[in-house]
Length: 68
Image 1 (cartoon, one colour):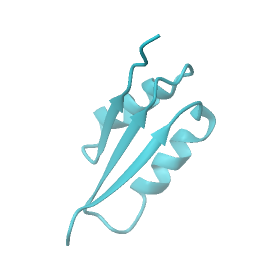
Image 2 (cartoon, rainbow, N blue to C red; image 1 turned 120 degrees about the horizontal axis):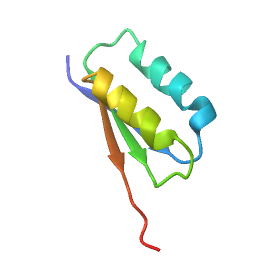
Image 3 (cartoon, helix red, strand yellow; image 1 turned 30 degrees about the vertical axis):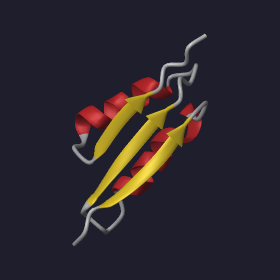
């Protein structure tokens, strides 16, 4: 089975993010990776992404820190 990468852009989505990630993790296709790209969201999205990255090897979290 080839590996499938699912890229999830994340910004101000803390209410729905866990549901989104759980939905992807619960797919029947097992050889996948989830790339969570947090674009410097001001809410708790970064923490949610990190939690999943630490608890499931299929999830990877990247945070883009904006230069102000």
